[in-house]
Image (cartoon, rainbow, N blue to C red; front, side, top):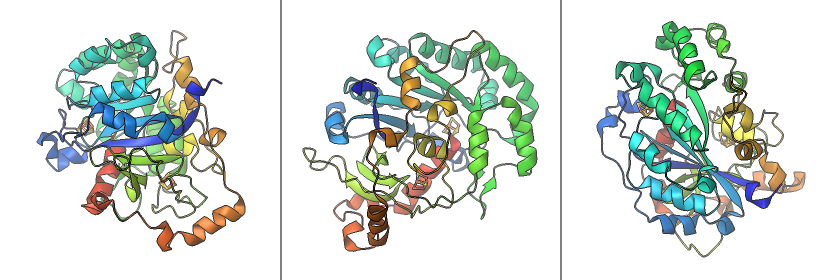
Length: 380
Ligand code: SF4
Ligand code: SF4
């Protein structure tokens, strides 16, 4: 495999804008009324961000997933950043509701060699799009990106209101995407336990939605509500990043380990979570676990979460993305010995292993940041 396609790390990049042009009933930005808020500027130039996230500094080619609290492509300042990071040689994934046509038109003018490293996760908010008469616009934007050589995946948040539309969704999906959408799993964060975002029982929920034959749905249901206690390399092989403050977290906004904008000429300080995952549920398991942040956890590939074979024989993932998403992070990173892991787990509470104190911004609204990240990932 050539070096330019060898996946070194996965970065979940959070854009702190909560504004959105849709108002999906199951989304926290709608429920809290923040969808109509302001767009938060990134606040750093594309070149500054490219330098902070250079291949040299990150140790190689990375997959960076850009996802906002609201709609990712609303802000004017994101595309120049994506363009610069593609030029750096990274692979970029954008989570979007697929409705901001002017952004897709702009992207369509970029060079082919950049577009082949761009992947879109189109969230298919069927009821909202139908209500606003925007279904054709969505289909056209998906088609445009696919025709320009980008990889795509279409994903639905299965929720009870959508059940009467299942047949219609299948029909329009086969017609417009040449395949059925993948399905995520909704979790109700307002309940004490890890309950499904549904009035159905787990068995009923599985029975209704399994007709989409989505590997993503199958895997997410199989690990739903399960604690992960094995050694996790999140914080080293993967991180979450707030693009505006530059704070770099081990996982989903938990424990700040560095700041990408500080000392840009120095290496970043990575530090794995180890066997102490702070969460009761790896809600973003389809990315983290499938890319292999827990090498001992059996999981399908990330390609299986995203790809579909189309009715015309083509695939949603291009050959390059298929090769990238079929890798596991352990293929390109060193695993620790049992003794090293044990030492890391023991020392995690010592001073040496605390979050670096100078990154004060990680402590501002800390609980709020964690909640926002969690909600944004859940609702995408
Ligand atoms: S789910 Fe996505 S598209 Fe729908 S309102 Fe929330 S942020 Fe917007
Ligand atoms: S949530 Fe998942 S990726 Fe994050 S630390 Fe826990 S097991 Fe690792």
